[in-house]
Image 1 (cartoon, one colour):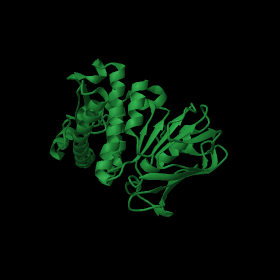
Image 2 (image 1 turned 90 degrees about the vertical axis):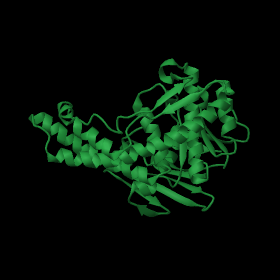
Image 3 (image 1 turned 120 degrees about the vertical axis):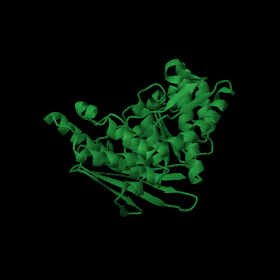
Image 4 (image 1 turned 30 degrees about the horizontal axis):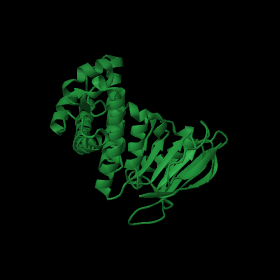
Length: 356
């Protein structure tokens, strides 16, 4: 999969630009706050439908404008010049399109164009809170499965309704009614789909991370990734119906896929507590590189790799390892330095403008 160009209009500080990319390595360089990350964010939006930086879509729109447009033109082994676009409106909402035909369901938009994004924040995945690891899973699986996207959306809607009922019961001092049970059953159905797909993905992830990490460390250390949560719908029904009174006291749903996590071990010890910072970074690198490998194994093509100022955060050995692993794939890198990567297309960014 190759991103041929990305286009922007009134998107953050980018007024009206088209950026053309090489099918191999591209480096967008310039000073801080000039628009390097904005360019990558726009590309990522076209693969994931949401930003890796903010949940507030109005932030994408230039202060002087009412709408913002972002899009990509890409090619796959089967098709060339496929376009995806998103229009954001200050009045609220967005319009997605594929080849200029509106797409009404995000499950039909996400996964057409696939990316792996790697930022300095992802280096914290191993030792940070569970929400970072859930976000990693959701992003990775969503791009290779529309079923997963649909289940996440339905789960979120059911969770919102159930939480409203729990909070209302707490505020009025009531016990649970039939409505809570109905939403509990809906939640259990979607939870089982999500958990089963997470479990299956982590099985693949564990094998790939082990291979990547072995290459990185010459086989001296052994990582493990384990997912221990329920995956059966009947189990989730029990989970969502057995603690209702306790959840009413808190006014929210306390258990489920929105709370789960996966465990990472290194040499049989929990990595977030016992691995060194360097080891944690190596595992984070292996997770992201493995995401790309799994995407390729499922679809037959590598995704586009987006590296947002991450190489500067790595020591020389890890930086060299990443560069060697992404060789032969399309990569778009942002950097404050003009240091050339051999064979890279250099794109200078100044004030939301891009020059070759």
